[in-house]
Image (cartoon, rainbow, N blue to C red; front, side, top):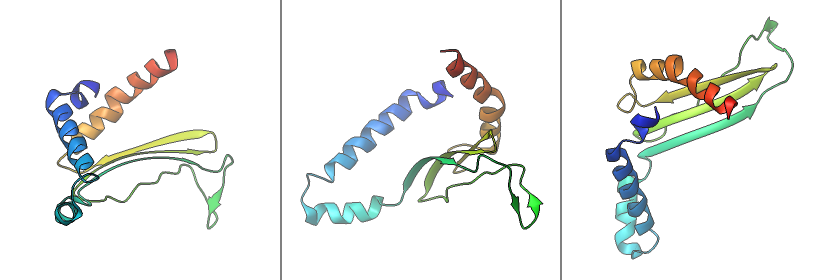
Length: 124
C-alpha cells in the first residue's frame, strides 16, 4: 500500500494540487471565483473515528453483532476510512471511487496488507 501511494506520479499530483489550491488565496477574486467553481466538490478524502456503545445493544429487539458506517461520497474522486468501536470490538471500513481503487484492490488491502500493517504498528 505504501509503495502504491508513494508512487512518484502521485506525489507530483499531490504537489500540483497543493500549489493549485494555495493559488486561490492569493489570486484576484475575479479570476479565482470561476476557477473555484470548476474545481469545487471534485475531490474528497475522509477519515472518521466514532466511538460506539461499549456494551451490547439491540435494534427493534434484534441483537446487534457489529456496527459500521460509511461516509457518503463527495465529488468525483472520493476515498474514505472509517473506524468505529462497539462492545469491545473495532470495525474498520474503507471505500473509494472505482477509478481510484477497484474492488479487487480494496480486497487485497484489507486481506493482505491491513493485518501486516497493524502488526507492525503494534510492535513499534
